[in-house]
Length: 346
Image 1 (cartoon, rainbow, N blue to C red):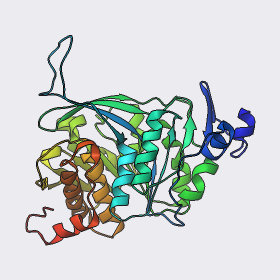
Image 2 (cartoon, helix red, strand yellow; image 1 turned 135 degrees about the horizontal axis):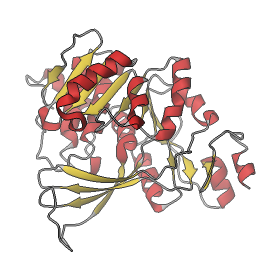
Image 3 (cartoon, rainbow, N blue to C red; image 1 turned 90 degrees about the vertical axis):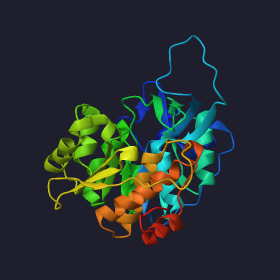
C-alpha cells in the first residue's frame, strides 16, 4: 500500500519515514475512504509561494512573564489559533491581495484540520502532504502587555523531505518563494537557485551560532531575523549575513524598538525604521513578526525601496497586535493609507 500511494511521486530518498510514509493528499484521501477537505482553487501564477511552517498555537494568558512557580495557576479561557509562521505569512500576504500558495507537511489530526480550515477561510491555496509525525503546535504564554513565551513542538522527523514533483510545478510559476526554517525546506534551495526565483526566509531569534539556521541565512536573497536572538551582536550578525551569503537585504525586527535594515549597497550601518503605533490597544503580539514580513514582501513585489518596504512591514506588524491569535490581517488599504499619514501610521 505504501508503494502504491507513493507512486505518484516516485521512490525519492527521504519520502519513506521511520514512523510511516509521507503521502500526497490526493492519494491519501482516496486510500483512506474519507471525504477530502476543500482545497482552495489553484492559481496559474503566484506572487508568493510559502513553504513549511503551518501549525496551531495554544494561547494561555497570564498576568506577567515569567510566571512564578506554582503547582497550579488559574488563567482565563485557553484558546487555539491555527497559523504559525508559514500559515501566518500565507494568510497575511493573501489578505494584501497577493496570489499565494502554501506547501507544507501536516498530520491527519484535529490540529491539521484546524490549519486547513483557517487557510481555506483565508482563501489561501493549500494542498498539503500528510505526515505520520502529525501537525506542529506550540503553547504560547501571553502576558497582559502582549508579550509572549512560546513552547514549540516541531514534530517533523529529521529525514522528512518534500518530493520535487510536488513542489516544482508551483515553484516554476511563482515570483517569490518564502521558506520557513523547517529542515525539509532547505532541500529546495538548489532548485530555487537553478530557476532563479528570489527567496526570503525568517530566522526568528537566531543567535548566529545554531547551525540549523545558517544555510537559510546564507542562501536567501532577503533575510529577516529578530534582534532578540543576537542582542547586542545583531548588527554584526547582519553584516556577516551580507558578507558571507547571497542576501541583498537583511532586516532585524525589535518589536516596539522598530526594525533595522541593512542592504548590500547601503553602507555598513543598518537604517533604523521606527515602530508604528498600533491603531488600537495591543492585545497579542503573536504573529506580529510574520505580519511585518508580509508588509515588507508586499512592498518588495511592488518595486518599492527597502526602507519603504520596512515602513509597510511596521504598519502591518502594528496592526497584527490589535487582535488575538494572528487574526488581525492588514488589508492593502491599511498599508496604502499609511503612505499619506505624516508619521506613516495606519
